Length: 132
Image (cartoon, rainbow, N blue to C red; front, side, top):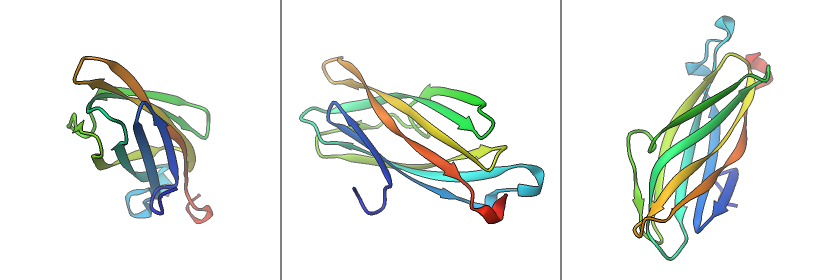
C-alpha cells in the first residue's frame, strides 16, 4: 500500500486511493459538527484512456443516517486519464456525529464509449476521543 494512502480499491485498470484526516480547526464540537478532509488519488494502471464522468458517494453517520451524493465529475472537473496518469484532489465531509464512513464509486467512459465503474474504497471517519 502507498505510504500516504490508507485505503485502496481497483477495477478495470483504475485504482482509487484514499487518505482521510480529521480537521479540528474546521469542526465545531459543542455545536455538534465534525469535519474531515479526504485526499483521493485516481490512477489509470490500464491500457486505455478513461474519463471520469460522475461520482456516487454513500456517507453514513454514527446514528446510521445515510446520505447519497451523486454528481458530475470531481470538484468541478471530469479528468481524462491516459494509461499511467493519475489525478489527485482534496475535498471534505461534515457530519453531525463524531464518526461515520464513506464509500462509493466513480463512473468512467473510455474513448470508444465503453462505460464502467471504479469503486471508491470504504473508509472510516473518526474524530479523536478528545473531540467527542
